[in-house]
Image (tube, rainbow, N blue to C red):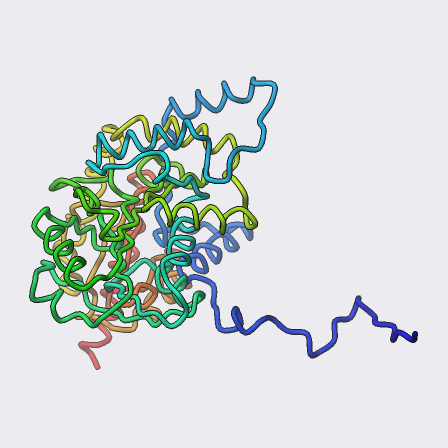
Amino acid sequence: MNFQQQNFLEPPATRGVSKRIAAARPLATAAMHERVDLLKLQGVEVIDFSIAISHFPAPAPVRAAVRAALDEPLLPYTAVGGLPVLRDRLAAKLRDENRIGAAGRHVIVTNGAKQALYQALYVMTDPGDTVIVLRPHWPAYVATAQLLGLHIVLADQPEVVDEAFLAALPPAKLLMLNNPHNPSGKVYTAAELAAIRTWLRARGSACIVDESYEKLIFDGEHCSLAACPDWEALGIATIFSASQSYAMMGWRAGFACAPAPWIKAMEALQGPITAAVPALTQVAAAAAFAIGAVPDLLADYRARRDLVVALFAPVPWIAMAAPASGPYLWGDVSALTVDTVAFAERLIDEYRVAVMPGEALGCPGFIRIGYIADDEATLRRGVAAIIALGDRLAAAGAAG
């Protein structure tokens, strides 16, 4: 039998990526942050408002729990879905804090919210199914749906989600919600959630709701969509993350709550991909989600939020309301420009300040500002740079 020799050091020109991934692009949010990191590696000072990275450390109980775990003789593999005791504790948190009637079998521990999102969307839909995403949106919702071959319908999120808005939505296999909302900071009211549940019952659609910012509430009260007796029958999957609520961005600690058959399916998917979340991350998650809210962190964020909103208040070309939740500010600059990609490019090139253009979140004419990373002086300098560029553009437009 004759075999043709192949030089594997030089891949043939015909070897390419799969059709599944060929059309995929890096998330715009990640791409901007990576650009900032590259500039910093080159010794360039950059103020990064493009994402939200807290200046707070992880809570002391989290760090203490992980230190203690390091003294244990073994850190073995765990069950794919997480340690049973952790899943039971997270279910108790859901019952006590979120009023969701969950047990350990309804919980899977994941590497952050993104893995929970991918796996939930994977097991709840088939290629070609329609998913509704409200705009503006976290970019990962659309990117994940695209990877899975779903038909995406973008609907503009209204100030109030009511029966009339919901009735106008097209038929869909699944509705994607974010409560509290990134980037607007909207916190859904009990009446809005009741209207959504009624819509789910009438339409037979399922729902994934991302509640990762549940502890970052400045105004109003967070309520879970699944806080109802028939949440399993309605097909509600809820996603949680420690990243922002507990300043644990790099710990990659998340979990999902869903009907038990979907959790089993998510475990089957997670097994050959990552298997269990690292044991130390599970220790950290157990400590974090037992804390509840972090008052010092929330008070600091509120003061920063109010400061930045006040600094922008006299600026005529930007409209920015104080968000009810979250680590971001959402500014409407459409009076100045709808090309916020170009605005963001000039800002980082000329002022070394990074913001996220609204196009990345489905809404040209807006910018998203993560305001929780730096000291107050740096925060003020970054805001001053944004205003300086905007004033220049406004003056040039008036002169033209």
